[in-house]
Length: 424
Ligand SMILES: Nc1ncnc2c1ncn2[C@@H]1O[C@H](COP(=O)(O)OP(=O)(O)O)[C@@H](O)[C@H]1O
Ligand SMILES: [Mg+2]
Image (cartoon, rainbow, N blue to C red; front, side, top):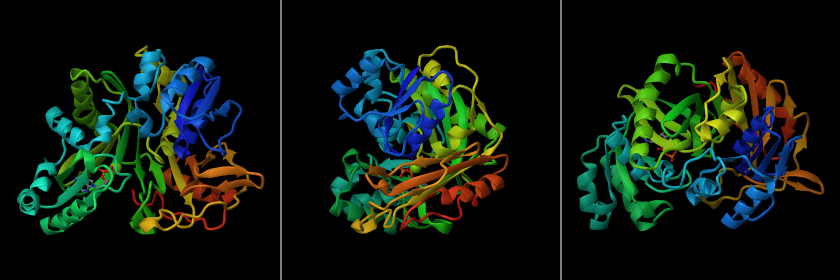
């Protein structure tokens, strides 16, 4: 089977690496991929990405399965294009991708489906009417969380301690509109507890659990500093087991899939739930509609069996083969470039030569993200540059083994967290 993966980061490298290990895959193409991705079955597609070129490539290469990595491809309608072409795609159509693209859409659906989530109000009208109207709505919330509804590059959520603080946030947003606000702004009640990401493969009504993970969004140790795309992750979350997984399936995944099916926009692909578990019970913070980066780098190494075959059959509603999750732990640490995450327009350094030693072992793997090939060698070319994953029988061993891998890829100005996996 020939597989096409869409995207260019560490997540896509991990998907490509994992699928190329299956006996059912003969070729794995990544579009556009990055210069660090290589392997016996691996290839990159160096063409501009548009619908016509996509259709030609699918036909020319005889692609049997498309796996979109980044959500932007889903918003563009790649899964709908695939449906038109008759090629299986492990991802939702553009309408079903609204579960992630629009937080207002998602919250409304959660409410209608009876999925546990904190109360919310759409603020768009009140914001148009003025500050008094906004403050009137905010009064209903004890710990208001302001959320930009549309895609906002991970910068659209403001957890506030009071209505006054939320009012100030909204005043600023009103003065300088941010990406994603064209879809509206909402306020929801803050909830407390521990966060966990849960991953499910879904196709029409069916779903299969893929694993749990915890990511680390802040740039510095002990969750200090600005948010990033993710500085590391660990899987599984030890308390997310048997009963808990069943409950998430029953009260969160099942009603979501049923309602999407009923609305005529069945959901296919990865449903990635961002959950908060605490004194207020288990609440859904958000849906994502694809694999996470860097969660994928710890989820996929723990999946046993022929994942390529599983994804293709699952996407086509064929008999679903067994997929087992190894009882082991995986840890992923990201090395980022000097300046990352580049707050207030600060530059992120690029062009540093990367020194590489062994990049793969029986229980570890180096994934490439922001890198570029030059005549001098591989150089840094982005914020998150390298990602190291190790897996082992226990979390403590996986943490130790992962940090031991770090010298296998180094560059001037690199920085990484030293506490990944230690806050479970
Ligand atoms: N209702 C809430 N209560 C408390 N914290 C929240 C709430 N909603 C979001 N958060 C915090 O903000 C983070 C980002 O919110 P999320 O909805 O996942 O948006 P995104 O990932 O698109 O930025 C969450 O991981 C969580 O830490
Ligand atoms: Mg999130």
